[in-house]
Length: 327
Image 1 (cartoon, rainbow, N blue to C red):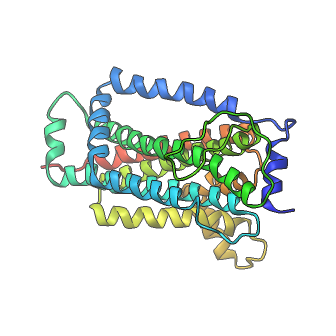
Image 2 (image 1 turned 180 degrees about the vertical axis):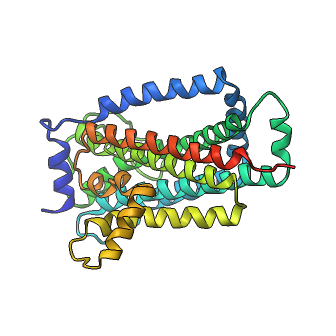
Image 3 (image 1 turned 90 degrees about the vertical axis):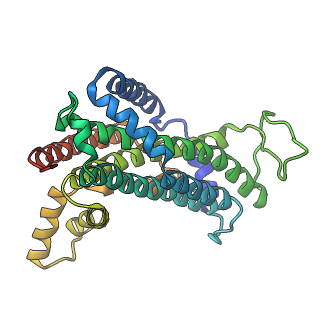
């Protein structure tokens, strides 16, 4: 069975427990907590200033423009996947969002934390009634918030274009479903907007669990970058984060591989998998693109893992920055 009929069949399956209610509840709790941190703590002052500064940076606009361009262009780019174009589109779209957000966070952490410490700008902030821990925590929250803004903008566009892409692929394969009239034909547009269809909507909204897991991965990577930035300059931080990202995706494969006979390789893989973040836990793009439903409890456990690892890395950042000479 091709990818298009498979997506239709699984999207229409009503017996599978959907994670969307849990996602709404989770974000409804998380967003007010961010607002509370921003406006009810001393770290919030630094967080708000860092978010505004990060959004104004050219790298934010560049990553946002690149991400939107790739997602828009891929709607009409043929993947030559024998009916699996929508699957490939979702997979590529999630990867695009992840890479753009990660590059923005690592670069911004290097500029906002490392450069301020090297340029003695941090001394001005710490001379006020703000301690070093509040400085690190505020920087982390601010950088992560700017990444959430990017993910939200690209994610909304990605949702609507996934809806249109699924309609477009079905039309090309002569499998278009009956739809309710939701959009009217607009003469000045170069393409015709699809009518509303519940199955299309189910396929389109399946990207939201993936975007949530991407947000968790970005949160962990941002914590690593901020912690490392308290001690090393920008180039070293970017190189370290790249190594952590690659190894974090590779070590779970080595640990689970049954054909690895070398005991030393297994030991090192398990050690790295314990110390470094397991980014493979957040990589569900393949499952999402094939129409499989991500269970709510899996997203909850991934969120708990993200929270614990972020707390650990921020604590490491506190320790590294505590005795850093700023003079």
